Image 1 (cartoon, rainbow, N blue to C red):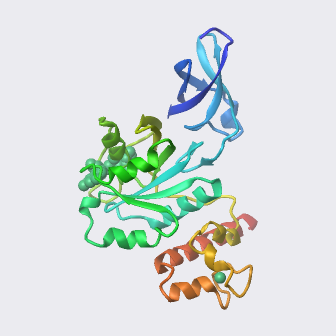
Image 2 (image 1 turned 135 degrees about the vertical axis):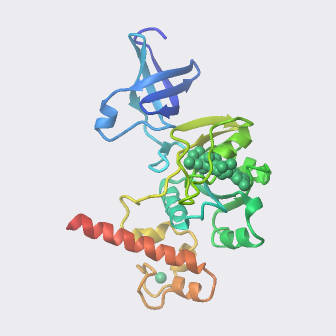
Length: 293
Ligand SMILES: Nc1nc2c(ncn2[C@@H]2O[C@H](COP(=O)(O)OP(=O)(O)OP(=O)(O)O)[C@@H](O)[C@H]2O)c(=O)[nH]1
Ligand SMILES: [Mg+2]
Ligand SMILES: [Zn+2]
């Protein structure tokens, strides 16, 4: 690239502070100007950026406004998040519920993907899906057997998606199976039955007519900038019932004549999901209290 020339490109890979950007002009390695990190606005995979050529280096000097973004995984400008859970490690559905909330806040389509389905006992996957399939797509797949891939392809074709979830659920294994590649994967730690955080960077791959981001697994997620009483707006399974609660501002926690609680009692809303809602609600309350102390 000529010195001083400027291009618009997409960030497709970040390894520590080395960025890969792609544009019609080609694929380049770039660095980010320090001020992005200073302002707390770091660059993430999916960002559309302006890159200038300076003395033989490519430098990212502007991040264009994001259509949407997630902090965990840290990605932007996506259509859907494929939230991967598996037979092992034991699914952390609080984590999945929080990712779903963040997706709805950001206008991203959440999809629940159950991997390693060949290990699951009969009825196990259906039971887990029954709490979600009224409001999001749920698909069961196996990276090992390459099964459920027709449904998976439908979620990817023509879209930009990210894989999201705990370590060792098989995000990179799915990526490998889709690409027929040999990216690094690893098993569960025998001692703690948890993942080993094998993938250490985020990268976009192109396959099946779509763009797929493989990301780093995580186990902690704090919902930021959300009031406890706003949480209910991001529970699409509760929304149709809210009109029947006695109080229009019902948060479905302690209020009398709550239609959501009634639906839980009658088995129309999944009880475990409702109990997780209460747990997340209380977590938000505690966060808030702490910030006033
Ligand atoms: N039985 C079975 N094992 C699988 C399947 N998919 C992945 N695995 C195994 O699960 C382990 C973890 O897979 P990874 O692909 O590294 O998981 P990951 O989600 O990318 O993990 P991080 O990169 O740490 O976030 C590996 O030992 C895989 O071989 C599957 O469909 N069936
Ligand atoms: Mg991985
Ligand atoms: Zn209510």
